[in-house]
Length: 195
Length: 143
Image (cartoon, rainbow over all chains, first blue to last red; front, side, top):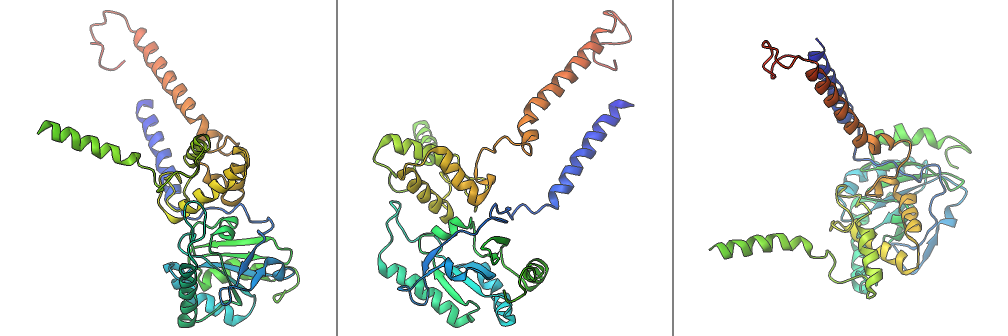
């Protein structure tokens, strides 16, 4: 009797593991930043790289940080959703514009200025062609701030609260359904929708 | 012909040994060795099953650059791992840390070994309880 029951039991346990495994999302990694202060940053504006913008400027209100780049297909996919979120005007959206990889050589030296400027041009053209949902876009040439945010692939979207803490992170193209399910309930807390 | 084949095989096996970056990150061989060791302990989060030493994804290149900066700034291994896990979580470590959540993972080989030994012991004990010259049991059939 046992000689049949034991293998059948082991098989059932294995199937159980497989079923659970099939239904777990293994693409999205949990961010260790949730519930912690968002990284501080100071970056040039995409529209005018001579102007430096610091995270201090957003202190005291909720805002979104959306990591995107003109090379990124998922960003194009989520773009209409971002435009809709911007149209609803519930929260300012800060764009963190990143190149496909840091514009630097192995020694960490930035690439020539022309190359950086052409990357910025690509970003600006993207915004003028597809519409601009961002209140401000900051250009992270070296991926420094993106790495501080633990970005592993654009697009990624972070919700930051009045205290400057990361409240939520969405990895991959954002949809209006994601927005309403995961973000909107977190907007109302502390100080209302418009912060 | 055989020599040609051998050469072809050798060449095929030699290519993965090339470094992924065009030049060494450090001139100092000691720092370079440390850099190479650490790149093999950090995971590329874009490709998941590769270390940042093996991956040519752009994120891996950026993490290698960051690692180089941290080493150049005189950070210890612990500080570097802390820096990476603060941003990317434990998943960035190619070797998962021993924690309560990962205990089962780490203990699994020992558990499998114990269950294997137990099963073997049970079977051997059962077989040895059979009479040596039982004509009804040829030693292969039901015990």
